[in-house]
Length: 207
Image 1 (tube, rainbow, N blue to C red):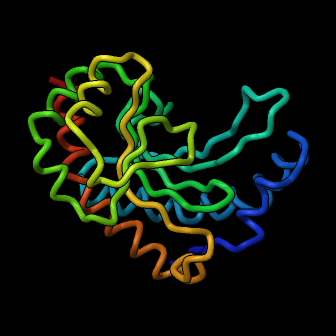
Image 2 (spheres, rainbow, N blue to C red):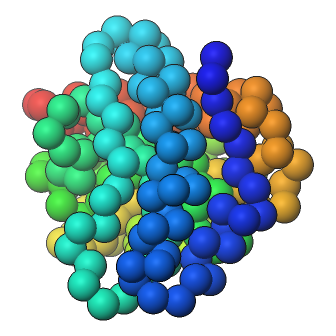
């Protein structure tokens, strides 16, 4: 299994000034690792879910001035895109790696999905205490799962731009990031625990 881990240099990519310079570093340092890891993860999830999932790697194509503060791979059940679908993400900010089940604002049927999550609020709260939640994918801060409230899920349902991402953060200096097998195992274990929520989102989307 050909995989790659992430180094201090990868995280320092986001300290490089200039859009072109940072994008060149993202393309040369990080995206080949995303390709290798993402292919393995897409195969793993496709087998788990018994349906084909597709790898997407963020291109940041719309940017013309400001360099990206983070970058990611996404895995979704749609070959053409991922933003309008429940999807899995692995990505980097300058100080951590994130592992997400992501439901972002472009999602159709977001209200239906949010309602199903509200109905399963207790199940969500029973996920590991190490899990964190983001309510805005553009910000690197997250709240602990313990701090998640019903109001957060109601806002996800009621506010068009509201988002819900759940999973884990690994600090840039976490030893797991230095080991291919440990990193892959951590990502897949996180996804395994999020699969019921993914299935719930898909069922709600398609209802």
